[in-house]
Amino acid sequence: MEPGYDRPLFILPFDQRSTFEKSLFGFKQRLTAEQSAAVSDSKRVVYDAFKLALTKGAPRGAAGILVDEQFGAPILRDARAQGIITCAPVEKSGQEEFVFEYGDRWRDHIEAFVPTFVKVLVRYNPQNDDAINGRQATRLKELSDYCHRNGHRLMFELLVPMTREQTDRVGGNQLLFDRDLRPFLMVAAIKELQQAGVEPDVWKVEGLERRDDCIALVATARRDGREKVSCIVLGRGADEIGVLSWLEVAASVPGYVGFAIGRTSFWEALVGLRDQTMTRSAAVEQVADRYIKWIHAFLAARGS
Image 1 (cartoon, rainbow, N blue to C red):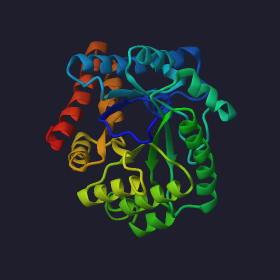
Image 2: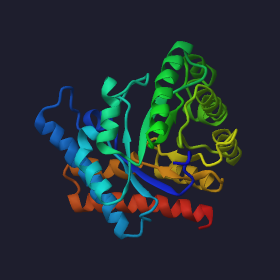
Image 3: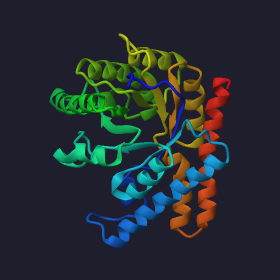
């Protein structure tokens, strides 16, 4: 399999575990069987919305889902059986430092589901603690090597959290950090990880305001012979205006091939369903329509 992935990729992610358990339902560890079923049912709503979107014109060759094994194993199996693009996470949810969800058995779980993409979420700031970054890079190289040896594509979700010094520098202002510091840090993080032997096929990255920053990011992802490596934009739970702005900027840059937008797609609908202010069918319809909206926005900005 040729390294990289440069085809359109429109992902509906609902692999969040801590967010569903704690923020949506207010559950504490350990979950009862009934609580686990409630989380799984809510994920089934999002999957049903995805399948509805396919009937409304979401392109089958580019549309895909990202869902976890813990609450979405039947969904992963069903989607794979139908030839849908699947992505499955390997990180333990909600951790500041990347560790494997299933410890030393993580390879077995990849082979059990054989997703189109093995996905890993990592919080990595190149100006953070060197020991933490070093430990993460070692584990990530192991994952990267395994994926490429065994014919699996790797999707790397890169989050760059502020360090304490950076927080002080921007007065705790996330918008200032996103505009003035994060673009440089994202480029530096990708270079460091590449130098450590971590080779994703797709970088799933936070949205950027400026086209020049997107161009620099793609150039870094594709440097030194990595011409087919691509980037997709993640949603970070932003409001609709923010998501559409990021999509418009990214879509204009060759090398950005799509997006992975989750909470902005499904959160309002799942809260309405939880609070019994929305029917299940209405929730499914709303999620499907939002997902379709992102696809249309990206393609329109690209001129497709």
